[in-house]
Image (cartoon, rainbow, N blue to C red; front, side, top):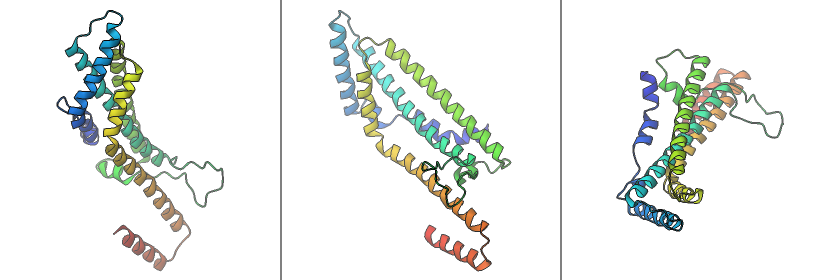
Length: 224
């Protein structure tokens, strides 16, 4: 339980901490809500439905937060899926069907994941089970958010997929830096996987002591 809570802490913080651009006092978000509210009120008014302004705007805020949470969860799903593919030896896909220069189906669990699980028995099965469980939790949370979003949308007179895309575009624009950070994190996992594959292949070829020491020195220089 301790390890689980430790690992999901960053995810939980991202889900609970409302970004500035989605707060009630943010002028751009307030203007977005106002524009959507006016569109919905006009559409509903054309068929004789009176929209409560306060309730309408609160509903729009809830929808925006759910779309944000869905984006966060999907981002973490991509990260944890990369963990699993690396550990299962499925990270590299040979699309050209050409024989690679070295084995690309070796199980390598990312160091950042292993560093968090040092107190547990380090086995492939343990890592695999743990990552799959985490992906299952993320999938459950994603489905819960999607269900809440569907319920709100279905009860919201005048709400359309086009308006939802407007909200999504607003969130995408403001969370670009966050996405780039997570994408960079995933790219580093791919880079580390390739490096470790090359090292395994190098050692398999049987280098002498001097060659091993020299390669470690070069690696140290490049890392620094």
